[in-house]
Image 1: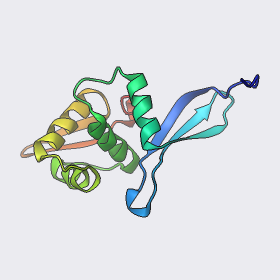
Image 2: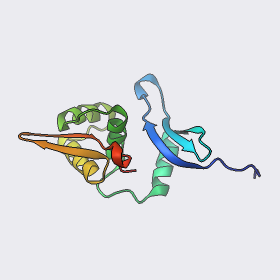
Image 3: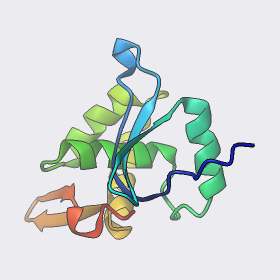
Image 4: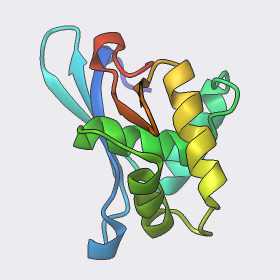
Length: 136
């Protein structure tokens, strides 16, 4: 066991999903250490699943697929409708979930503070909620 002082991270700024089409396999979590140094936490699928299991207390209605959608929207920004989100979901998530999964995920992400819901006549859209840190 090393006697070195561990680097303590108290702030997570963002996460970047792997671009699996280009062969990337690690998620990058961008953090800031207590002393102000930038830190990149690299998580392969196994480490990511282990961390998710350790954190456990995930908000009800938000499974790994919904959280991937949240990360993508928070990193991409902009206005998201169910249709736009579902196009991304069907390209990024296997097996392809039905559209009601995407609709319910967007609603749950808004309830838990990741997104802001905007209702207009005949249209519901969502934007990232950076004011609350995306629910994190």
